[in-house]
Length: 175
Image (cartoon, helix red, strand yellow):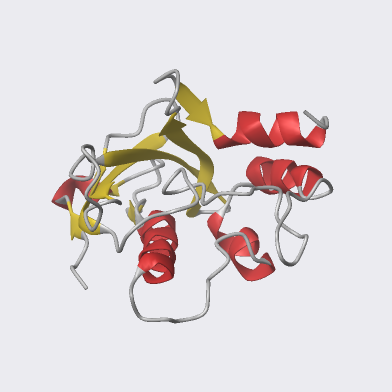
């Protein structure tokens, strides 16, 4: 497996009380799970929204929206996920992730954007197989630690930014 390249500037102070936290920590955990899920190692699928991860990787608002959306599970084997696709690779199919990089932007108005880029279709012969997928994690501080407040991907059809929190709100409304 390729290692995740992390920009040194990922250590950013969230508050003025003098402590510095690694704002990429929750994103690293999610990306390691996602990388493992799509690896050719036949390991069990890791749910990036299981109770233990919801408890420490995501903001309270994100968790509330996820739990509301989870009341309307998508068609899947266990009937527990509100999604019928992998929200990180933004699809149902992918190859082992390649050329994964991560970079954190400075905190603006209490939010740091951690941008992750990777190639998800490198094993394919499709014309866009070598294209990069970009996922933006919006990270905030809660309880003195960084947590993911939203996951933003590019809509494949409209090329607009899609907020996972907005998607979960629509799912919770039955849409």
